[in-house]
Image 1 (cartoon, rainbow, N blue to C red):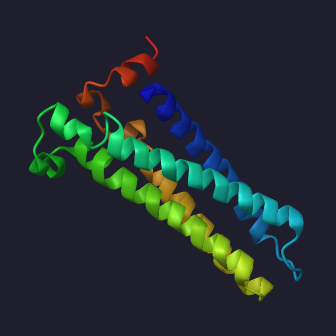
Image 2 (cartoon, rainbow, N blue to C red; image 1 turned 120 degrees about the vertical axis):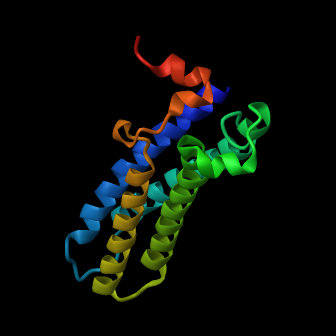
Length: 163
């Protein structure tokens, strides 16, 4: 089940990136009209995917064996989180960056629904979407960051790697 939830989280993260890019371009096109029904649907899909991503992040962090339970299972202390790069990334930086990006998306949704000034609304929403996109891109464990993901001794990582 853990593999399925992690895979679902990765899928949601990439869907979130794609929807953010689409919504950023849709908001950067200047218009004097109110939000159309089609634009509201794109925003709702983005909110739905970010909400599902939020739930998977919370589950993985609290109940997944690669979240907080790794401290107990592998005998790490609280100070090890700050000393070991991969623990700091996976237990502090990654959840915080993803939650901030989801918060930006929710706040942008509130602005897009409640605000009446169109040009100002599009500008604010675009800025929040770009901020969320930057946080998500920063939170992705890229190879050049040298985050020792194999230090978790995680079998899911070994299953994903191509041999």
